[in-house]
Length: 120
Image (cartoon, rainbow, N blue to C red):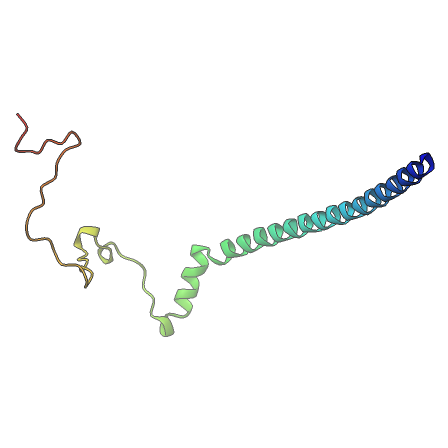
């Protein structure tokens, strides 16, 4: 009986050692994947920084003015003038087609249940 217990214990130790060995290699592989992902993220951030710098360089006002002057015959772009801008209150917003305007007033009560007529 004792030898059977020794054999089962040895098998359990061998099984646990195999499991730990396999888990160690899976963990190392996962860490390698994470490290590669971090490298890809760093590369993407560097590319994004370079693209932002290129965008800022290409959108310089003096460059855009020069391009507008060169292509004036084709584009007919004019500089902005203050009279081209309007105010927000000058814009008329149409009602959505499915909503009807409210014609009769709605009575609104306060939080304590008193209406405007019942206040002292």
